[in-house]
Image (cartoon, rainbow, N blue to C red; front, side, top):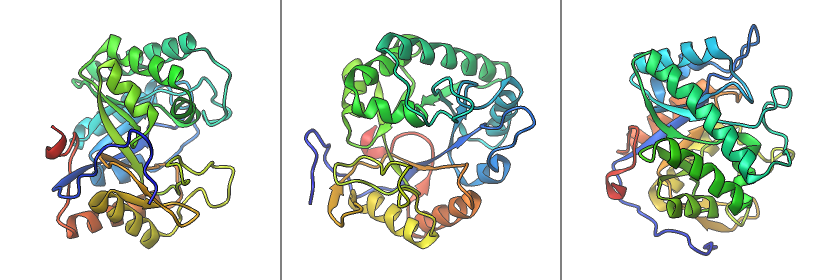
Length: 270
């Protein structure tokens, strides 16, 4: 079994997990995802802040819908790349990354306040997330921006990664994130979307991966090796075809296994 340096101890005895989904990624007349149909099955929403996707009206409506469903509101800042949906790497400095996050968090925090809500967490989007996993300086810039705005916000980071370690060093509470619909590399990173095996499109395969990550703290990488992961929050991508079916099926499987779905860290981490 592969264990990355600095990986946290695995907690196998648990009663709940956060189920998060990326949302609010429509733009103007262009509709992305099935947010209203997914909200009943998740406990937290990562809402686009207008850079990689989303617009002011979409942000307001998505925040209001999340509040109405009792779902925790998270900012989902990304790279300024609407055409590429924030999934193309950009050569940015740590200061530029800091500034991008500050502006986007400010916008969504204000939108949440206008609807009687407040932010619960922050999760970087797409290429910005993956760049920060690989680059400690970028990870520190993202975490520092969140800390400087509101140090009480949860910071979602790839499970047991350097990104998670850096955010903890900055002083944030980290929710280690695992993915229901993505395959893993032997080093614990996500398989690049450019590869045909990056996404898991079979519900039963996804459920098997989810239950193993949540109950055993392990995931099988694409080469067949085992990787230790810490699962505090579980992501389902709202833009994936069949996302509603995945959300419904995964939640049902978790509850059948005696694992509730709720926002925040599991009791063992609080």
